[in-house]
Image 1 (cartoon, rainbow, N blue to C red):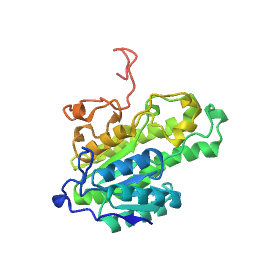
Image 2 (tube, rainbow, N blue to C red):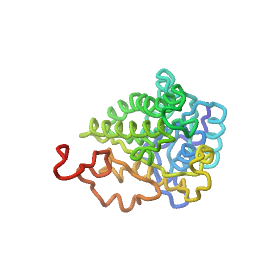
Image 3 (cartoon, helix red, strand yellow):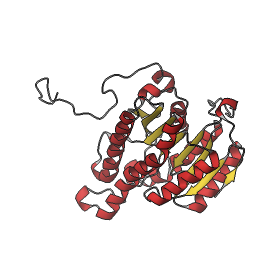
Length: 289
């Protein structure tokens, strides 16, 4: 396990900790899954740059430790590498306990870990075991992390949960049926969680990162030749705004990095079913309307 950098100050003592004009989250503690590569690594570095101590979870211990060490050295923040399979209940419980033992609490949970369909094929051609592994990685993984982290947030009276969503949360891709099902299920979980948390200062959000150029997206045939990548700093910016409490009225709703501007969102209070999954009536006479 990697433990580098400075101990985070108590929130009341936090001063700065951010560089390059980034909003400070000094004194806070984040836990990010899928932290060793891709979006997860960008998030760890971006949150550490803003002054947070960050615990990173991933299955591959060596690569995770290397990533956390490099980020600690680059930012001066304290990091912790905890190898864990997010679908393993015992491993998740032990990993969260280790993070809390080291940092005292978790203020921000980012459920980022998850697999993708192995091949671009219709659902009846997909390998059943791999298909369910994809769904399980996103849905069971997030539920186990929520189960392990949210009680502590409620006991302290504050916390933020971010589930990494996708455009496929709201529009299924036939060649990525497992990923589409998983991300839609995760979005429903976020809404259910946010509803259960009403009346507390613990909030839950869906954040779709858009298409960030990563090892995973570069390997997906669907994105071959794609050039309109979402800058990873836009994903960090949106999640940092959530962590700071700026976007609390959007709890339980879908946000899109690179399109949604936090400076605009914080002046809006969404109403009704805005940015939630709902059926669209076929007409005013639709009995489900």
